[in-house]
Image (cartoon, rainbow, N blue to C red; front, top):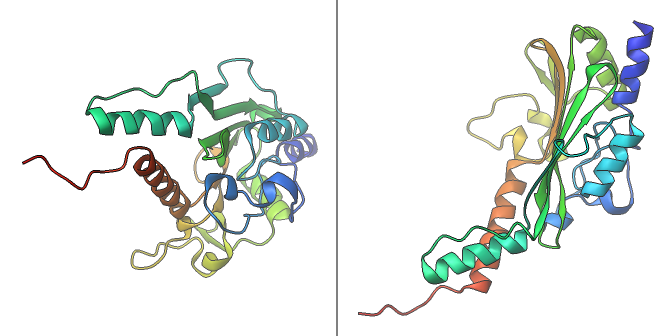
Length: 237
């Protein structure tokens, strides 16, 4: 067990709780202004660039497949050009993949741990981290040992579900409802959050941007398209 816990410490290696530099304002590059969410998974934080995320994973002991562990998609500028062209002509146009950014990065860590980093294209170019998902089989590390290490890294959970088997940490405005289902008010998932779980056969950690950040990115995209291909105020009749 000691060997397993030691290796898992590499998998969940912590970055400082109060960061600086490029990751200090993770939503700024996406055009969404809010305080940085301080938690990381294997050193990867929301708002990091693709190169920063890769460097953090390497430092945490993860190996990155040379090709099949990386996915790409069109840059935000390419998406805007394609949508503006469709609006002007009515014909669907695929975004040019020659102008592409990284959208997913996968790594394999110690003791069969695996991690998937999701990235989203930004107005400034490139892409930044918007989700991190770590999984580790319980046949390698028991769930209770995994949860102890999770709490040791992140501190006391803001809330939990599944009889304590799914602890959660939320952004400051939503800490009071973290881990609960709130159908008639702002949900915990509205802002950046982190959840760990040992409910099934895998130990998992999921760090993700909030639904409000997703909607703001879509509003930014729509506004940029409007600027590139303004809607007309005259009809021909």
